[in-house]
Length: 248
Ligand SMILES: O=C(O)[C@@H](CO)OP(=O)(O)O
Figure 1 (cartoon, helix red, strand yellow):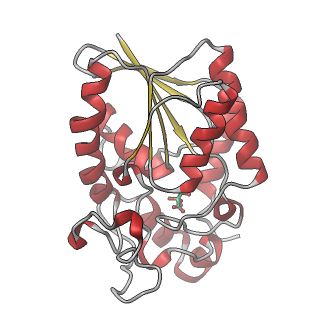
Figure 2 (cartoon, rainbow, N blue to C red):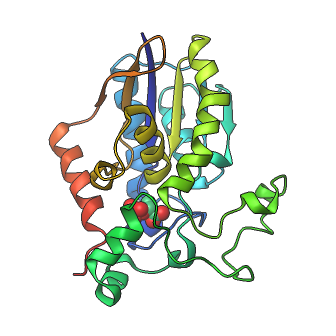
Figure 3 (cartoon, rainbow, N blue to C red):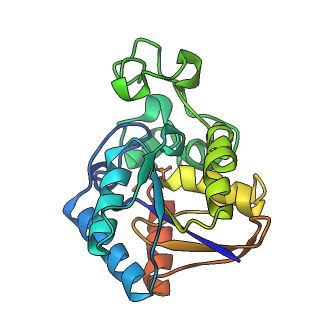
């Protein structure tokens, strides 16, 4: 049996301000820093250790990983930064307030933009300052791979090769792996791993900074999964994420 641990970054400044974030590179809040350290504490207390870590190229996930590893005294571990683990690109919604957007367009429309499998949010214009074409961290990528918006299906299409080509072989080689990523890139991974339907994935929300353990069989099919923290606190945090897209 193999085990892998997934973790969404701690609270970011735009989580706190309730803005659509996507590829915007915002940092952690003080609460987010505490959540990342607490994740390290619980992993250490439960006897977890790792050989290799993956994260995105966005600092909220990178810093969460650093803080968690620091707490575990594992800062020497190799870390692979992979853009394919980035948050789902939120298109022209990036920067907008989620509650205000729901008040303007309705809760239903915002739920479609946030959680539908194959309907993307409105796209950024190519010349928009928020587009990532000139960002040096994506300099090695062909322009057509840099999104202007993404639905979850698009995110699955980039996360899946990262899993199949990069992460899965390392798990099979016996490496204990920690992945620090984002709400929707993790939803993409989990949808694929657990074979969740396009309808059911709408209801899946990932809380900030809570280690999520997946036990996998020899073919990397999930046997079971569980969060390590307090179950009531995690359920409350998941409900809070679900409610972020509703008009006040
Ligand atoms: O804004 C975002 O990029 C994501 C994660 O914070 O939000 P949501 O849960 O609305 O998809």
